[in-house]
Amino acid sequence: MKKVLLLAALMVVIGSSAFAGALINGDFSAGETGWTRWSAPWSNGISWGVTTGGPTPPEGTLSIAQGGQGSFGWYQTFNCPVGYYAIVNTLWKGDIGSAGWAEIMLFSVAPGTPAAAIVNKIDTGAAADIAFKKDSWGLNPPTAWSWQPAGLSPLPSGNGGMVVSQGTVVVAIKLGSVSGQPVSLSVDNVVACCVPEPASILALSMGLGAMLIRRRK
Image (cartoon, rainbow, N blue to C red; front, side):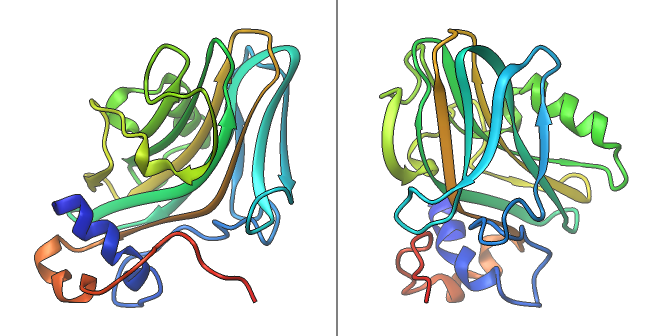
């Protein structure tokens, strides 16, 4: 119930100056602005792109070519008071083949943490740092799916939201595969922010509807 209330409140608080910083350019309307590319050193045949094939284009698309393999994606950071609650969701679509994985990660680091340390933490992929995940070994099937909220694919040992223990929140998008098959992952309307504990935002959450699908004019 706690996560339901937090997710319902997200679209209210994301535009409010009363709450902490939030992720920017989650709809990729400004290209990759705000996002930082990352990749594991063993990756090859990988590509990042901004495409227009989704229901509300543009969207960010990661892909691995035939014969390639790797683990890579984008990440973004924003500041958040310690003790606040960080939440994330997105729309995603993908095909991870017979030996792949797709993840939305959410964790916090100390302000000023070097980029290399953040990338290492993303690449390592501790379960507690993963909000949502699909893989080819039975987690949240199917391995090829059309547009849906990533929140429908929780990692049981992961987090769908977290109490911030350090002052910088990291949201990361990850696609990986070791099959040599072509795989891809598209994301759009990524939303994330940090808010006070639910008791202080319960009234704001009442009556909110679809939080991810927004109309572009």
